[in-house]
Amino acid sequence: MSTSGWEQMAAWWDEKMGDTGDLWHRALIDPPLIRLAGAVKGIRMLDLACGNGYLSRRFARQGATVIGVDANAPIIERARAREAQNPLGIVYHVADATHLSMLEEGMFDLVICNMALMDIEHADGAIQEVARLLRSQGRFVASLSHPCFDKMDTSGWDIEYMYPVTTIWRKMSRYREIATAQVPWKTASTVYTNTYHRPLSWYFRVLRANDLLVSAFEEPEPTEELVANSQQGPWLAEIPLHCVIEAWKIKREA
Ligand SMILES: C[S@@+](CC[C@H](N)C(=O)[O-])C[C@H]1O[C@@H](n2cnc3c(N)ncnc32)[C@H](O)[C@@H]1O
Image (tube, helix red, strand yellow):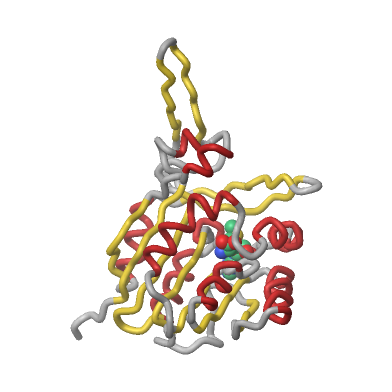
């Protein structure tokens, strides 16, 4: 596991996400994730790879009992500082998503994982832990980079203006390849984090192998706010760079 890039930019990330998430999250990724999470009052939930915990806080304010986990100690320090300042009863752990032995089997009604599965080196191990931690009929809701359209290094936009029509193309190559790449983040200096591409079928196969039955698949559409305020907004209205998966923990007949 390498989360050193994430550690290096913890302060920057905390400021960027703040208490509500940045525009990209607020106006694109979060709405379908929140919709699929549904009513959370009174439920026990895990925010896996929670970052600075802005979603943990959102769900705790709505009445969920929330535990947040991230492998990046400095970002968890910041999440805890926010909790100390404004207590919501959220408990945070520094832990690798594949080894959550401090959490009990079947203890959660809902596990969310916002934009992190593609950043987790052993996402199959993380999904196995999710399945262990969910009660039967519990749900897993995860947003991630869309494997079909967003692969670092080998996908990109192609905007073709041929009067009078503009055509938005999204290029992709080596889709089937399971590959590691680095994501550059423009902080004061450029910081790199690892990302891991797997085809969409890989996720479905791993979920199924862990008794997690896919029940919804969303491809976030930008809100008017994002279309107006991001160069990529109008392009994202045509082609999604993210997806959100909901899966139910089923109980197999013995
Ligand atoms: C793109 S950020 C998303 C953070 C948060 N969910 C959000 O929406 O703001 C990805 C997060 O995954 C965490 N991460 C990467 N690998 C991990 C692992 N093996 N176990 C736990 N967390 C991990 C990083 O530390 C980082 O906070």
